[in-house]
Image (tube, rainbow, N blue to C red):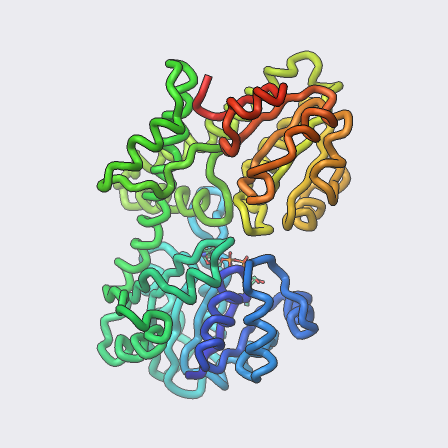
Length: 433
Ligand code: NAD
């Protein structure tokens, strides 16, 4: 099939590369000239495991190309996938202006029937808005499909290649058939396509993210309670996760959820509810619990150093909002580091993939390191924000020996306190006294 993907970020680039890998011809369009120039010179703008390999392979095979020229994409494609950003506006609503701009331009450029498909996360009703704009700009026929994306940064290529489910929002049987053809190579054993109307598809995406965010916030609140009542959240987690009605996923307490999706989608659903005079009270509580959790972690550390905060140097492991990504958007690490800096602390930081993005964001306000142990020399404590594999089984002798004060604030509950304490290291983690 001939496809254009507009917006070549975490979602667009992964979708484009995976679709090309199944034999489709994919034109990637982005209005970021530098990004397209880099891609055309073989530089992948984001870190996502396995992505560089499939991009290079499919580009070499002539199935994947990159341009800033939308006309190129529209001329050469039947399906136009929109994967541009839909950032949160000040009032929490999703800013869909980029989606609408692309739809309008596509309508102006198309010379015959096209299918417009949104992978961007968009509020209910976007289908109607896109269709109205397109009708006003073209007399050619088109179909609109809502196809929310569920890939997870850090395992995005794997998620796309082995699709768990695909939500297709369309009521046109001919388009349904085409979608089956598009996605069946990713689900050879069993079809997991769910068809519905576009509005339901649009809401499904927000509902899924808010459900997952709710689980995390509930666990984070329970971890705070555990600290008060002398229970251990890790044991509670194991206990409830063993209930098959609950399961083990998304039950890990930590420093709060972050990233480009959960915080923004939680706020957007609250906004949608308020607009419809149907308050999303549970989701509102999820948002406040998440902010409280980040504050609680930062305050625990600030309280620990008290008056000495201005003379304190903290070593920080992990900046990305989760492991296996370089994405620091809404990362709890950045939120807490800002608080530490305001209190006068000096910050040394290390992350396997997110250093470049962090330097861009925080500049020389923090010191960055290429080695996770060198930064410990003379520091007053180690704070862990991200659950990277390389932090899971560290050299505790080096940590104890190189830190001026041997203390770890384990924001991800990576370590067994008994082991850490045996090494002479004081440890603080979520949900255990
Ligand atoms: P991103 O910021 O990484 O990428 C968006 C891209 O769109 C950028 O490269 C930007 O330059 C480009 N762009 C913006 N306006 C454009 C325009 N008018 N024409 C051409 N290109 C344009 O964003 P992302 O993380 O890939 O997210 C994209 C959408 O997918 C969002 O709606 C997001 O909520 C949703 N989503 C993201 C994830 C995720 O894990 N990141 C998962 C599921 C859904």
